[in-house]
Amino acid sequence: MNGPELGGARDRKPGDGRVCRWGRGALPAAFRPADLDHCRRGAWRLSMTRFLGTHVNRLDRKGRVSVPAPFRAELTRAESDELIFVPSHREACIEAYTSRAFDDLVEKLENFDEFSEEREDFAATLYADAHPMRPDSEGRIMMPEALIAHAGLQESVAFIGMGKKFQIWDPEAARQRNSQARARVGEKGLTLPGRGPARPEGGA
Image 1 (cartoon, helix red, strand yellow):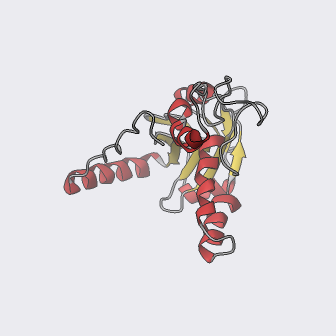
Image 2: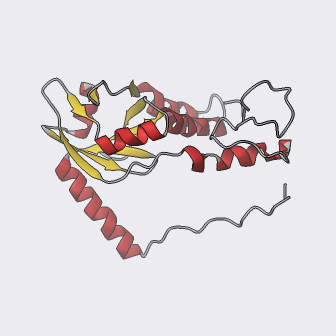
Image 3: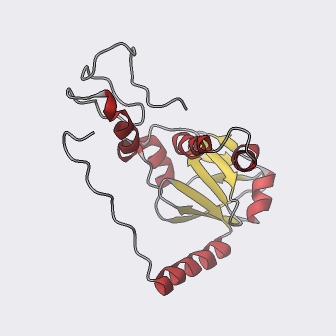
C-alpha cells in the first residue's frame, strides 16, 4: 500500500468532510497532514471485525459448510462479503480474514527488503495457499481439499472466533487447543498489555 488515502480528490482542503479509507469517521476541521498516520492507525477501531464464540457446523460430502450466522452478521456490519482462507503456519487449522484484515496483515511485508529471503518466505506463506471466497445465498462456503486435509476436518467443523479473524478446526482438536491455551495463560499469569500513553490534543 502506498499510505493513507482520503476519499475524493486529493487537492481538496483539510476538514472538508473527507473520510479516512480505513474507517468511516469524517476528518475533523482542524485536520492536518501530520494526522494522516494517526488516522490510519486509529481507524481500525471504527471498522474492525469482532468474531466471537465457538460454533460447530456440519461439513458435507462436497466440502460445503455454513459460516455461522453471527460471523455472517459481523461481515455485514463490516461491509465485507469476501473472506480469505489460509492454512495456519502454526496450527492444524484454517485461518479466515476479511479482505481488509488480510490487507493489513500482508502490508507488514513492506517492512522487509524487497528481495530478502524472509519476505519471500512470508509472501509464499500468505499468498500461495490463500483462497478468497464469498458465502453463497445460504451462507455456505466450499472448502478446498487442501485446506480440509491441512486441518484434518471430518463431518463436523468448529469455527473459533479470534477477534479480527476466525479459525476452523476439528472440534476435538479445538477443544484440546483451547484447554491448553487457557492453562498456559494461567500458568504464566499472563495479562493483556495496557494501552500506550494517550495522544495529547494538539500534539503531532
